[in-house]
Amino acid sequence: MSGMRWLDRHVSLFSGSLRTLLQRESDRRRCVGSPYAWLFQPYMGEEQVALACYASASEHPVISVAAVVLNQRHVQTSRAWVATIANTRSANSAMLRRHHQVYGTTVALSPSAENLGALAEFIGNRPLIGWQIERSLDQLNMLFKEELGFGLPNAQVDVAKLHHRQLRRLHPQVDVSNDLGEALERWQLPAMNSHGVLSEAAASALLYIRLQRETAQVA
View 1 (tube, rainbow, N blue to C red):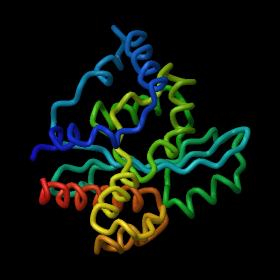
View 2: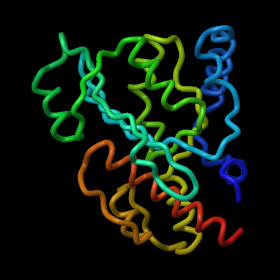
View 3: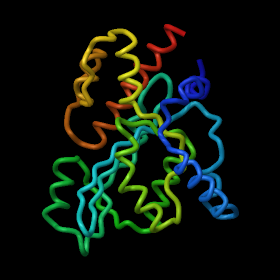
View 4: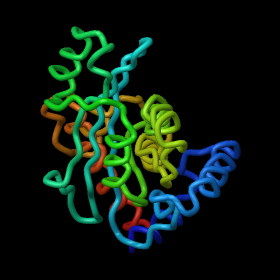
């Protein structure tokens, strides 16, 4: 089953309220003729991008991000975008160091239109997948709107919701947690080797592939 056909079958797992859909359409119209217009076009390929994002709430937010390309067969960790986005002049230096240490980033980028544009170009118009992805994207999308005038318009699949649905189908009485590590163990996947954003993005991608195969088997 192709990636896009599978995504079409699971449209209920896509995040986004009516307000979000209307906002995306407004953004699309505003970006017509801009260098980012292509991001709003439907994606016809077989790849997705797994995204993990952690933000420290403050007057000057610090956000660590990892985006990893995957297809139906494997996670392409050699194709990854990893950085902490922060205004290094105003951000709390201790918080910045903590993000580098805890989330495994080595690069700090300012939240400029150029840097956010580079992330948008990396993601392209491919669907985004991630563990509780809507919550992860909140702060990042705020930066996109401030600097580029739009939030990421990509289709999104919440791997946590997919995991919950599949597990309840197999075991209706089981308690389902919101812990990614427990989900990996439940589906007999390798544990994350760290709490870094790249590790989480790769883990959510592996889980997505595993659940996709599970769905195909019962289709």
